[in-house]
Image (cartoon, rainbow, N blue to C red; front, side, top):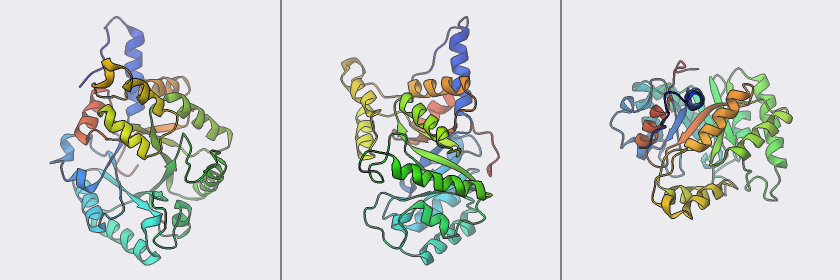
Length: 305
């Protein structure tokens, strides 16, 4: 695993390392039940109290989701399960899931999203409908999805009109709820569109903090496959350009450049809307966790923060 290497007499480089460490503070990471099952003990990989999202892929039994959340809670982490609206068949199912999460894993946080299913299983189609259901009243933290490079499912014409309208609705909700809100975003590989998007949110009056999605270290081919499948936008060109360089083609991708650029921008602009980093461990949880620790990442906030 490559490390950042700095000369002791290079204050600029040392400053860059400090910026990255500060930017990675309180990072979160994502797992699925099947990937979590391959981890013997998360305490050997992650700082205590780390927020761990649990991705709910269509077809995953709720029993596996709840068991994963309960295990993370026992090991000292903050489980945040995905609640994809379009795979929830009814209000009764939603209530049952939430009751299980609370009773068996003391879940207090959730990521609400539409989900990647074309045809909803029931009456829910969006995170806004989940919020309106009232089922999450009393949760300490609710995150919703963000898309720095657009979302063609919501705005097929390439604009961001519908996305911005939804974000304004969510901002009004954030202003009226006791739950802490954040926008957990799709992963990107280029800092420029991320910075432009976060600045656009501020200009539109969207003050919900951003938890920026970052793809963890992985084989280049793996990242390109996931990026295409997940609809990553223009920043995909960063990977494609790298793939054309024979000297880099076989080397694992690491997110150092994009993280360093965002960290530097945040250091110069403290009010910039990115609050935290959220990792997608596409090359494996251990690999991602090792990279984060090597670069100063730590989760020091209380588990319920």
